[in-house]
Length: 255
Image (cartoon, rainbow, N blue to C red; front, side, top):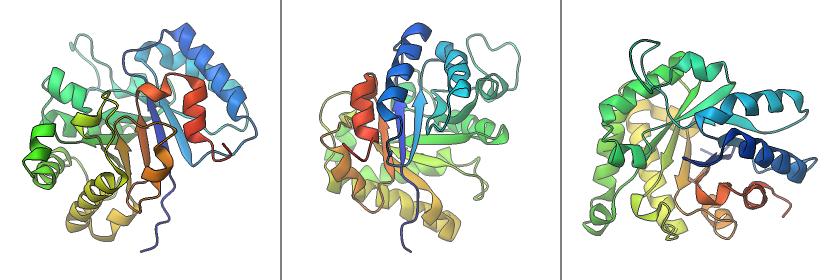
C-alpha cells in the first residue's frame, strides 16, 4: 500500500520550562513558522503546569498547525491518587495527544506495560490519541533481541486497543535517548517495519494507517534522512525541541 500517512512531529519537553518560559517559546515558534509550510502535524508536549496557558494562547492565534500533547495520564477518572492527572483535566487544557510509556517512566518509575495499556485506554476513552512508546536497551540490541523485545512490549501494551481507535506508536531506542547517539535511518526503518508488521498481524490493513515515529537524539541534521524511510512517519523530539528555533528548523519544509 502506498504510504499516505501524514507525517507527525512531536516536541517532548520532559521536566523543562515554567509556564512563562513555555509561552515565550510558543511566541517565538509561531513567529518563526507564520505563513510557512510544516512537514505535517506538529504537537508540543510541555509540562502539565504550562498546558492551560498554552491552550489559551493557541486559542487566540489563527491559521496555526500546532496541537498540544501531554507527557502522561492516569487511568482513573478521579479519586485519591496523589500527584496523578486525569483525562478530563487534560481535555480541559485542549490536549489532543498523550505520551504513554516513555522509556524514562518505564525505567525510572517502574511503569509496567499493563499500566501503560490502561493509560492509553483512558486517553482513547476521552477522545485523545495515545502515543505508545516502545524501545530496547543497548544490551537487548547487542544481544540481537530487538525485534522480540518490541513485539513483547507491543503485545502487552496494546491490550486496550480495539483495532479501530486512532493510536500512534513511537519507537525510541533507550540507548539513543539524550545520548547524542541516534539510530541510523536503516536501524529506525528496520524497527518501525517490525512494529508495523506486528500491527498487521493483529489488525490487518489498519496497520497501514497507523503512524509510527522515531525518537532518540533527533536533530535538524538527521530528521530528513530518518523520515525518508517508508515506515518512519515522523519523530518524537526531546532536547532539540527546547529551543523554538531548532524545533522550527526540524518542522519546517522550507529551511
